[in-house]
Length: 455
Ligand code: SF4
Figure 1 (tube, rainbow, N blue to C red):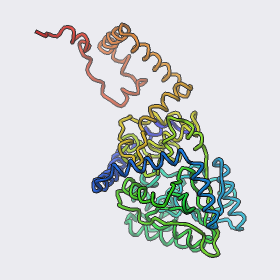
Figure 2: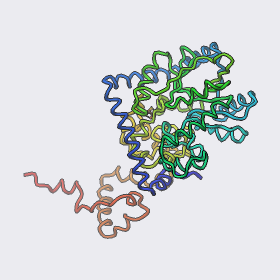
Figure 3: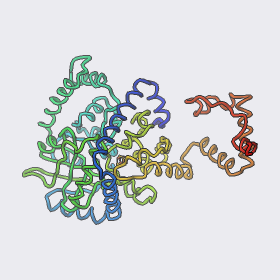
Figure 4: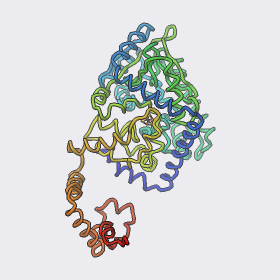
């Protein structure tokens, strides 16, 4: 059974030095984002524009998706529709099979992680090589990515050196990033040159033109797609934008929010297959329609996957991406995952301090922390939290509902903490496990207030 977030985070927290380093590295990325953002005086207007365009798209999805399908088909792209992850995987497998090959190169696509495409294709005997450097590293280690933009951010140079030593035959103990990157480059170059089918994700699909844009910093999506005879693009249906002119808003928001760059190094536009090439696009629902139908959570579909909410989140930074046990970790993943499976992901909305930093940095103004709070209410009401937690919440509600009961409980609590502290400060109290308990006050605030000298 998958460990819940707090148990997995406790595991990650055992290596304190790593936790501190992970925390500081992500905070550094967040600080770079701040610097890039402060250079644009119209940043808030840009966020507002991005948010409004996405709101408009979510209210007119049907029109924009059918317009996109029509234009893309006219451009010579084959458009497929997948209701869920299984259909997505089967469509991609059938394309690969039709080409008579059993190997594919793939650039970063969180949608394929969400649909577990690699595992599915492996079972069918298809070898998939991830071409994004971070993705390739975690793929060699048979781990999932821990971050949507920086998939191997949980690893140190020495970890990468060891992995490359095992899989690529680099020198043992090598940690020089240039040496290691060069080894990965040579390995991937051979892959690019020999794969007939390449898969990419989609950052933005443009309804007006039937084309799509893929953003990478390594140029690996381009290398794969340009050298292959068949280009498959996998896209969640929320990636649609109405017009090409809207790209200016989103490309500026995305790169600055993700890594603090003014623009992603490669923002590649694909509009039609080149001569002799085949191009497919698979448009996927996989629970998105359900989320769209939940008024409190629908605007989570505005997400452009920049990961700014990850980098700023004090819980993510100190618990690591794998503790979220879902393809998309962090604050936004904790909103998306319960939509897919409430029982399996009921722990995630609780993996937050609700400090609101995620909502403050989100480039498309998703009210992330408010949605996390709302999910908690839904999950408690639907019986998806442990009985201890739900009994605790119900008891607390009765105490807080009655002033008399509240005062008595306060007195009793102070008495117990003074005379029998072990009744409160024990291992069953998870709050106490992580903290030093404060000294017990002699009286409550109310008692002090009533007896204070006001003369
Ligand atoms: S929710 Fe907002 S901040 Fe988080 S990844 Fe999506 S767009 Fe970025």
